[in-house]
Image (tube, rainbow, N blue to C red):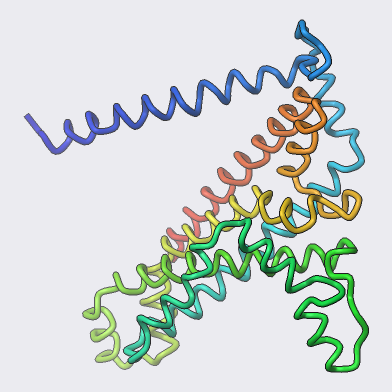
Length: 288
């Protein structure tokens, strides 16, 4: 009996059962309500077909939410991945204070979204916010950071990047420390330069780690909700809405079926993005 092949299969049974019972079944049953007229005003739920899905695509706030979601996801993915990589390279060196610096960079990841949202709401507050006080020191006027669309999107993006940078640093640092020193020494003996070491040895070996960072940042960036809800609530108007806040607002007004319909559309987008990136990253790693 080949126990190496049998035991891993047995160990998958419980996680799969838990995943199916507590995630797959509730989600599947829940999505069925997207095709009904379920709301807080009716007692008998009836089937309405694709009416709610069509309403999602005809809603004028959905394109705004889509653009905002893509901006949050794109900015977070690019900046967090790049900065996480740069800081991990620095912290991977034999610095005397590297443990203290690692702790400082990871501290924001400990805070909840509520705390981070309140901190940055105070920083970007129009009247007495720290950012506006600094801006006024240079002779500029007060900026309503959370009072208009693009400045609010910028402020939320900064808060989200600050909160998640620590995770990217830790993950990338773990990848860098898994690179065997023997490869580096062998390359140096062959006359490889610093850039050659990075390009031909370090980067290919940690590419799976980089891909994990990108995928996590992309997925969680697309799922932006908590910071937006705390800092702007989707406002002013609907200018900073995301799919998450749209779902919350629809649910809060008693339009449960419409909220589920938005969730269904958003889930399809997430699956498409995740599968597409997974295919792309596999080719990327193979090319390296």
